[in-house]
Amino acid sequence: MTSDPVHELRAALADAAAELRGGTAAPELPHVERPPKPDFGDYSTNAAMLLAPTMGEPPRAIAERLGGIVGDRLSDSVARVDVAGPGFLNLFMSDAWCLDALGRMIAAGDSYGSGAAAPEHVLVEFVSANPTGPVTVASGRHAAYGDSLCRVLELAGHRVEREYYVNDSGTQVRLLGESIRARARGEEPPEGGYHGDYVNDLAERIGDAADEDPDALAARGVELMLETIQASLERFRVAMDRFFSERSLHDDGSFGRVIGRLEKGGHVYHSDGAAWLRTTAFGDDKDRVLERSNGEVTYFASDIAHHEWKLAQGYDRAIDVLGADHHGYTARLRAAWQALGGDPEAIEFPIMQLVNLTERGERVQMSKREGEFVTLDDLIDDIGVDAARFFLLQRSHDTTLDLDLALAREQSNENPVFYVQYAHARVASILRKAGEGKVADALASAPEHGAGLHPSARALLKRLLEFPGEVAVAAERRAPHRMTTYAHEVSQDFSAFYRDCKVVGGENEAFRIALSVQAMRVIARSLALLGVEAPESM
Image (cartoon, rainbow, N blue to C red; front, side, top):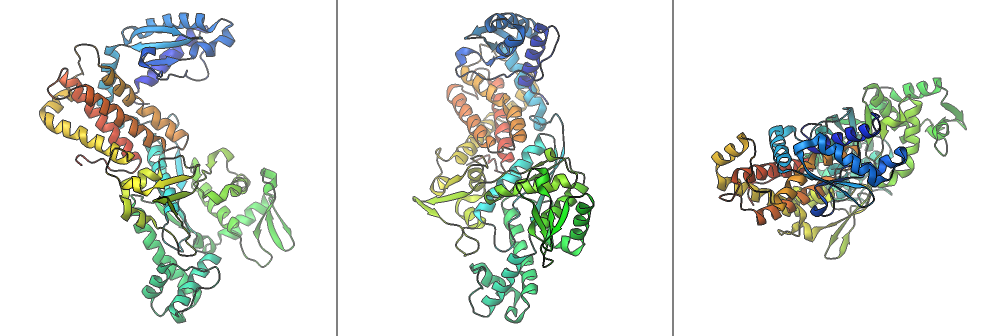
């Protein structure tokens, strides 16, 4: 991990612990956390309590010995080491360590926070909403999550591809064609058809739709809807690497090939005229139909053919972002993946939960089928791309999200995205006041400081040092929402620093300018991971 002093601090503690264990290293690095109060030090570790069961000594006694070794190893980097409570080791880092840490962050530039222990080639499939209507707010949450996850994974060091799986075959697509024809004739769509105004628009754009074959209308309707979907996603700052057509699997014989492959492996059997995949052999609760007795291929079979293609591409990992109604679908997909020879640990299924829009206490309903829905474009028109992305990413993907439209419109510190963007703009304003010359000089030389670091400056610096760890955890846990919280915390710490420490014309001006530059960089990078702009004036 590049230029991460905190990671190196953990490694030093691990080396000290290994020395206590007679040279035997622990299986993982000890935890190093910021204590709840600065009085307890800059960092705290429970390493001694973890060592106690194997060493057969009281944790406090181990902590005393460990503290001595750490103090010797880190030398001038640690001002004081205290033992607290049942055996916590509290580290008070020296000003020299802090200044060196700031210099290393600045020197790292755009690479700060990058790097992964084991880089992978990852395919992330997300959004993948049926091309039978515009992108809704619910699908917008998928888009924000999937794209931000890709950005985090890329910064962490992985090679990532973004894919949208286009369900352009089957009953729902034919219903779109029938709905377009009905609207062209001035009739109501068929039962289960589509009623939105966009269907009328499709009928008008296609022309002569009243007498067209529904399948031909469906194909043309899907083509036009995909253009609309792509435009909406691009507006939302989501650029897919691939739109994979389900129909292509029908056209190239993939179904016959994959069923034959699974039969050869002994995973398919025939009963009541249908072909079944023996998913129970891989932990599913029942076997699943691949091909019905009438010869119709199931949606599940389409997914299997698609995942066979994924396996053939040689990705190290596949991540399928699924909708809230797909909880029961993951077991059969994983079973099929294994039947195809895939490693069950190399495929993941994050399940997105729903979005509730509230307006003056009233919930706005969304239903693509009935035409009573809010599109992603509607949301962007209302609150803007930045607020839409930030708010849709504020909660973990596996929890229901309530998006407060009134709050998202506010130009105040109560609005979290406004608060973070304003902090970035404030830093930019300070640096403009300092002038390019002073900023360049502050960045060109090693940071220096006269008297002891102000607590607010130290708090901000420690927050900035958390960035690599936050990126690593967000990538590992598939949790880009963490970056919304982190960006807000950095902004809060900068506001406290700016309140307490005069930057331009104050004491230790060069140091404070350098610290401000790094704060601006980290805020901007955090926002970029969320797909949100970092303005330099507001």
